Length: 79
Image 1 (cartoon, helix red, strand yellow):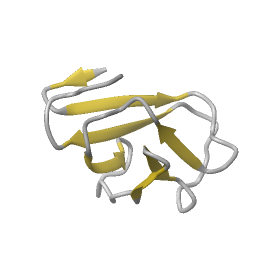
Image 2: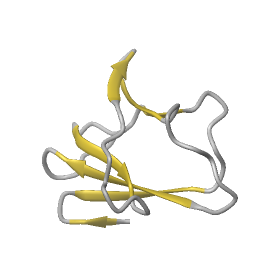
Image 3: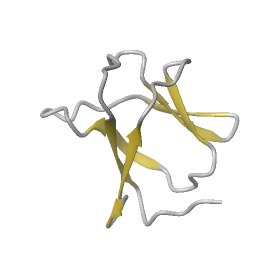
């Protein structure tokens, strides 16, 4: 789901590596945070082999669907 320069990603399964790679997302991520976090604590984002990767090691997996809010640096662009 998108709204303006914000992309909302729904995580139905927790990544085994505790990192979420977004190889087709070309727009830089300005900030990534869980929607359920009232403080909107920023999650680390880095580039690995040309893909933006969100580090989820500090986040706790739950039994429900998690929603990530990605504030993008500009308009959404994907390959």
